[in-house]
Length: 121
Image 1 (tube, rainbow, N blue to C red):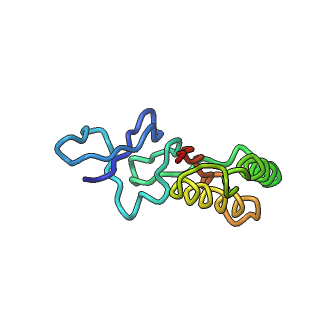
Image 2: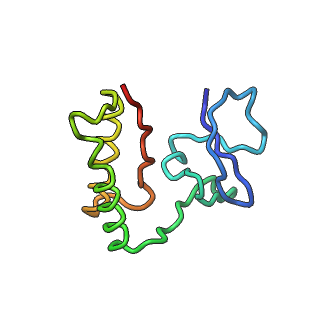
Image 3: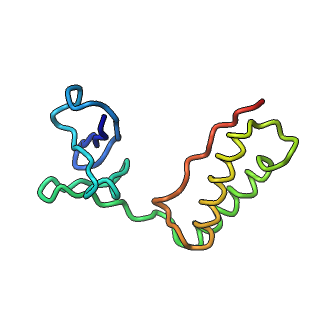
């Protein structure tokens, strides 16, 4: 199995995982050299085979405020009696750690985490 970028109009529309026999000929195989910047929304240069991440639509201050709000909105996930599974609590803890990194300026918009599922006991 390998990962491929689905390119449409010079931009990555999706990233799929499949074996080579099932890959569409127009898909771009992601390798160690190009996968770091391959993400949905990144632009693709077919001449160089490289991806460029989109610029953040938010200022550093806006990102800080957005991450602070997301942290406050997810505080409840860390309460002992909330009823989430142990794995779900760990996933939320990781999500919140990334939000703190963004709030502190250690990570940027391109590393904004996806909110984990809420899995209850």
